[in-house]
Image 1 (tube, one colour):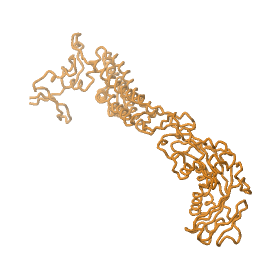
Image 2: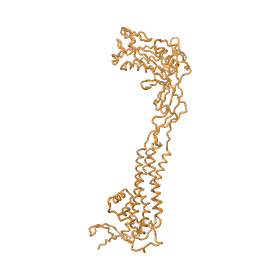
Image 3: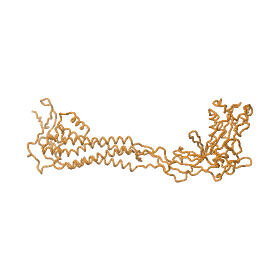
Image 4: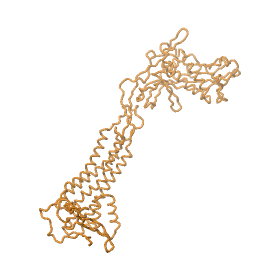
Length: 609
C-alpha cells in the first residue's frame, strides 16, 4: 500500500482558531535582536578602537631640526601618521574588519526581518493583499534571511529585471528587505575596499629623528692665540721659528699628520662646486660623528694655475746638461738636466707680492688676498715622458725623458662656514679671509718648505696622469691647496661646532590619514546601521510580530508544509512546530522527493518503520 501523502498550506477557514491570551507565545525575540545587534556593532567598534589605540599609543611625532641650516633633506609627506609598530601588525588588525563585514549582512537582515514581519502581519489583518509578497517573492525573502549573500541579491535582480511584465508588484516588505540587503552589502564592500586601500598604502619606512646636542662637539677650527695677529708672511711666533741655520715649523708634528691624513682631529677635504675646487680643513671620519649633523667654521683655499712654460723657455737652452728658464714675471734660473742630477724630481717655486709678479720679495709684506706664485717642475725622468702630452707646447721633454712644465698661480684664502648633514656637505659658504690668514698660509709653506716633498710628488703625478698641460696645472693647483692648508694647520686648533644635532633612525609604520579615515568610517557605518536597525526591530517586535518573524524562515515554511495543523499551533520556539521535538522513538516523519503520476516531482512524507 502506498503511504505517500502530499500536503499544502491553506488559509485558515475561520477566525475562531485564534490563540487565547493564555496560549504560549513565541519567545526569543530579545535574544535574537540583541545577538544580531551585538555582532553588527561590537566587533567593528572594537576593531576600530583597537586600531586607533595602537596608532595613537605608539604614535611618533617627527622631530624637525631647530635650525633651518640643519634641516634634513627630503621633507616628510603631509597627511601621514608615523607609528612605532610593525606595519604588518596594523594591517592585520585592519583586516579583521573586512573578514567580519560579510557576516554582518546576515545580522542586518535578521534585524530588518522584524519590521518586515510586522508589515506582513498588518497587511494580512487589514486585507491589503497587494502589500503581501507573492510565493516567489517570499522565496526570495527567505533566501535573503537565510544567507544575506550577494547570491540572494542576484536572484532578486534576475526577478526584478528578468521577469519584466510577468512579475507581480513588489509589496513594501519585499522592498524594505531588499533595500537593507543592498545597503548592508554596499557597506560590507566598502569595508573591504577601505581595508585593501589601507593595506596598499601603509608601509614600513625609515624615520629620522633629530635632537639638539648640548655638550661640546669640536668640529670647527680656530687659531691658536699666538696667531691672532700676523702682519707679514715672515713673522715668528705663530708657525715660524727662525733658527740660526733653518726656519722651523712650530707644531710641526700636528701639521705633518694633517698633510699625511693621519690626524684624528683635522683633515684637509676637497669640495667641488661647479668649476671651482675648494680645499678646507674639516673632520676625519669618526664613529662619533656618524649620527651627528653639524655646522662648523673653518678655512679653505682655492688655487688656480695656468701653464706658462712656453713663456719661460730660453731659445737654444732646452737640452744638454742644464736648462735655463726666464719667465715674464720675477722667476728665472737654471735647472740641471744631466742624467745623474735629473734622476731626482726637481722643483722650483717663487712667491710674488701682487698679481703683476714683478716682485718676489715677500718676507716683510702684508699680503693681499689672493696671493700669487709661480712654479717649475722637471719630473719623471726615470719613468719617461707621458705620451699624452706630446705636441703640447706648454710641456717639454728633456733629452733624458723628463717632463718639464711651469705654471703661474693664484691662491685665495677663505673663511668657511659649512654644514654637514648625514655625512654630506649641504651648504658651503666661503668669503675671502683677512690678511692674517693669508700671511699664515703663504708664509708657513714658503719659509719652512715642509710641504715641498709632497708638492714635488704632486707635480710628478700631475705630469704622469694628465692628458694636457691645463690638466697638469689643475692637478698641481689642487695639490698645492691641500699641502699649503695642511702645513698651515700648525696654527689651527679644534673648536666647538656652531650648532649640532644628533640623528636617530628608526623603523616606523607610515599610516596615511585618508585611507585610515576611510576604513574607520566604513567600519562605523556598519555599526551605525546596526543601531538604526535595532531601533526599528525593537519597535516592530512588540505584540505578535515575533510569531510571524519566526515563521518567516526555512524552519517555519518546512513545518507548514510537512507538519500539517501542528504548524499552526501557538508555541514558544520554532522547534516546537515539529513532531520530532516531542520524541517519536524512531517512528517520525521522513521527507523525500519523488516523481508523481503526472510526470512531475513532489515531496513525499512517510512514517518511519
